[in-house]
Length: 207
Image (cartoon, rainbow, N blue to C red; front, top):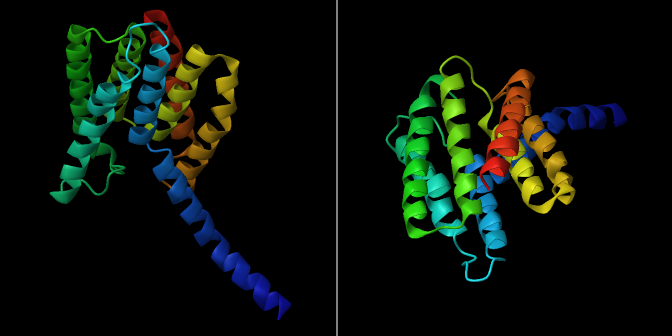
């Protein structure tokens, strides 16, 4: 009986881990993290007298909501498998659309007088999207990992070393993508390094 129970546990464990990995992938999805990051940085920019704390909202609209809407429309029309776009060949156009949406938002918010910190974050995001779109032509580098690591880097630039407490979430997100066979270990490592490098250089330089 004990052996049978142990066998049953062994059989169910992979399924449980897959479910956990799926939840992690959704919670730490790029659109979610980008929206939260922009709202957080926008709120921080509001510490300056006379600056609204809600500038992150239009930033999140152009950088996360509109690009995600484009992807979901593609899923409904059957052009894309799901909102994570597992096929590398299908990623380039949504990435380019996301870059265009972000640039449009950046130009509009610049004209409306958005705070420099939010504009710098949007610019860094545009550089990141362009880099991933370029690499995706040859290799499926992990966008999940890139955005997660970039989020921690950007928050570190804003709030200091305390933001590094979010680093384990980056590792958790990388594990989830490998666990679901969405990416290889090399693809999540490369994505994380590129995301962290761009957010850790472009954003601080422009803010």
